Length: 247
Image 1 (spheres, rainbow, N blue to C red):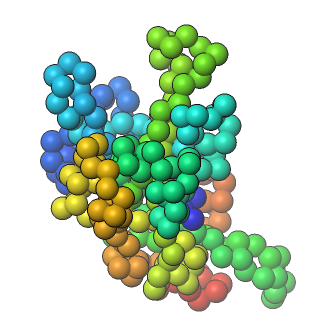
Image 2 (image 1 turned 90 degrees about the vertical axis):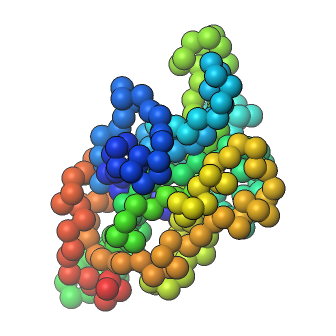
């Protein structure tokens, strides 16, 4: 799974990478070195502009943890931070979004943990690792709208927009840390992935890629990242690896 990640790319940086992009400066998110479930995350998507009728590529903050439109309440979103690529087109929670509401979530890299057994006078603990391609990863995602029916429909608070990250079996360097990893969309495939009119599951699945062919750089980092309250670039500093799994 992908349960924590780093997101420090600015909207201006994304314009340089992706081309024309609209966003509301008031909604721009601060850099985060420890994005956690239910946090707002930056997502690039395409929607029809109601004023012009044109499809516009947008950068919007979405809450991480997808809440299906039919859910009775939003409490289950924290458990839907990831969608398995093998079944994303079939699962009721994801299949509608897969054919109509896709996005990418820019990330610098992500964290995974491996258990370290007790020994040499230490207690058992989980060692965090940071995995990265060294450049911006456009993680493949889905988004969904959910309405709180206890609030009037015309109240902005009535609507919640949430997202999930699509994952697959981990390979190569990522596989030695965790059995799952996020999938990405290449910049050249972005238009096809974001196009709201594209709905063929086979074609959409063809656009999903394993970042760096699975050959990600891996380094052990401080257990400070275990706390969702911890943040800052210092979380990415390399530490001694008790399991010898880092590069």
